[in-house]
Length: 262
Ligand SMILES: [Ca+2]
Image (tube, rainbow, N blue to C red; front, top):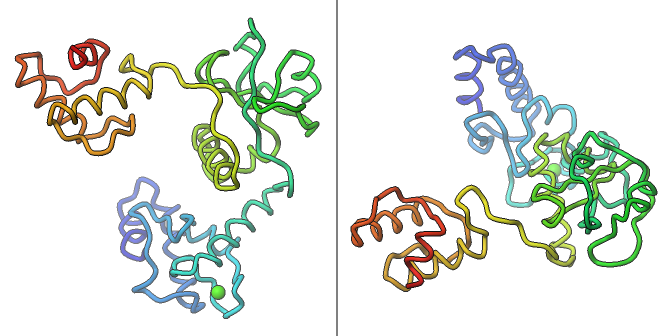
């Protein structure tokens, strides 16, 4: 942490910001919360299990286990998780309320009405035909937004107050949906009822997985098919294309999937 924050303070683009982070990191050491060898963080200065910046640590970290040290780095994640809970609480997380839920949109629903800034009362969305994907009625939690990244027929969510609290951690809507969805699944919640459409490769996730399985069958090893096209899949595609005399670009496509299925 000291190496990373002092380098970034010296490098200059955000010098003042990282100078403040460096000074905070030194104060944390001085306070005895951890030691230099255990105070690890990313190159960009985020540290511990839930990636607190040093100034955020000073503001929100708590000693949940009561041993006198706020230890967000140790094998026991209790202090880190409690500190994250404190961060969410102080940003006005409402206990017991969901962040959002998957919904089904009615036929002809205008996606122009979706988006995080397009907030309306839950009752207005219910009147417009928005229904929980897993049945029941929408809980009346005040103002809410609809997020439908794949259009009206893809997965869609209604987003309540607590979703905006998650975004205080990271302002990406995809990040917020990912965190919220994973939390629901960890708590035993159901999977999505709708599939995402094709991505910019022209293939759906199921098709990308099928493409990876076919590459494996053809002895171009991509590892366990997961629908995520990383460097290993790209290398396998390149090898396959080269062996078949195709243009070598390493990119998945509907034509490549069709070739593998022949
Ligand atoms: Ca502690």
